[in-house]
Image (cartoon, rainbow, N blue to C red; front, side, top):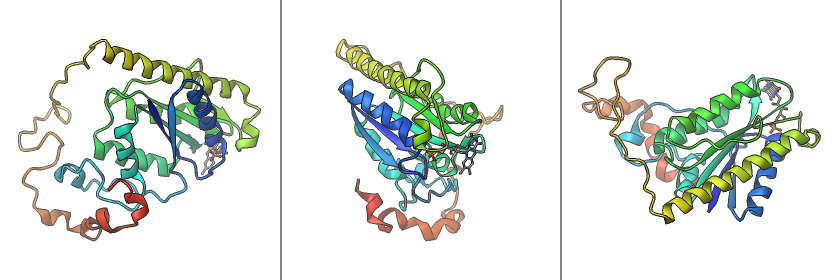
Length: 248
Ligand SMILES: Cc1cc2nc3c(=O)[nH]c(=O)nc-3n(C[C@H](O)[C@H](O)[C@H](O)COP(=O)(O)O)c2cc1C
């Protein structure tokens, strides 16, 4: 069993990393493998709503010049996902927000794989950031992993955060709960417990019916020329920075 962790901080060894490190150590004690992807170091563009991920049925983002698609591919072999972010203006950091938007929109999420968010802040805004990140899991059939208190670590940097012993306890508890959920799901599978039946997704865009649209919400008759603004990027999926295409 394996968990993918995303560090949305631009600081490789900052407060967010300190929280994730505590989780990683505890997961290893529980026999769970981990992989950490440093996201916040990169420039991550926002979702351009071009719809190419749906239209082409790639299940990936058309923009290949950052690690969004790497994370999507890694999730195929991972059983759980933990995202960490520093609090920036009482929300998650900009890059990890863009990353999560594109990761979840392009892939359609990772149903029935447990997820959790943790945030790091100096003083305030942590609950808002946590709530923001939890929503990616909650609207994608991903069980939310709980802890004993708030999933947040306080400090201005990794060293200061060392003093937040309660925050670190919360991280360790979160890790043990993640391990427990993964093992429970595995035991359920072994006992023949099937996943809940899936109902085909109904989209009503707040009361209007959408007969002319696909389930993904893209106009079926949209002419390719409508995507011309994005044309310079279409080749990026295969050509741009091979470092981010390791899954190919
Ligand atoms: C642009 C920016 C905005 C910030 N906004 C907040 C905030 O709203 N509340 C807060 O407590 N700390 C805020 N901080 C401080 C960081 O959340 C804090 O230093 C945190 O420990 C950084 O985590 P990191 O080392 O993982 O990047 C902000 C920092 C930056 C750079």
